[in-house]
Image (cartoon, rainbow, N blue to C red; front, side, top):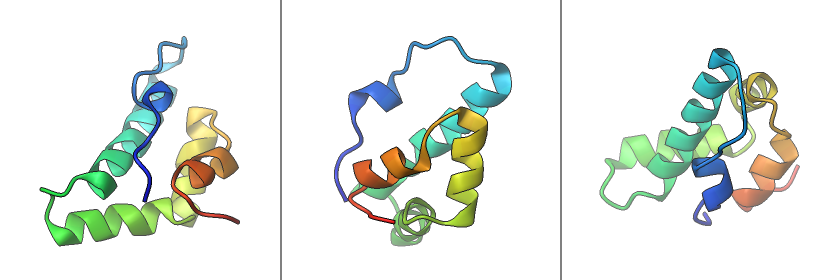
Length: 78
């Protein structure tokens, strides 16, 4: 899994509170998936989420992110 781009992790765009929460969920999954110090169950869960799960698509929709872009960042293809 690739390291997440800084632009998603440090977004400065103007968003509503619910969008901010959704971005935070995706950001945390990206961080958990790439953290070698995280417990393996945490990394595995984050990687499963980021592999194109239906919940990733839901959170992307709330965040206003294109799930295809997030999947590309993670090295996954639809």
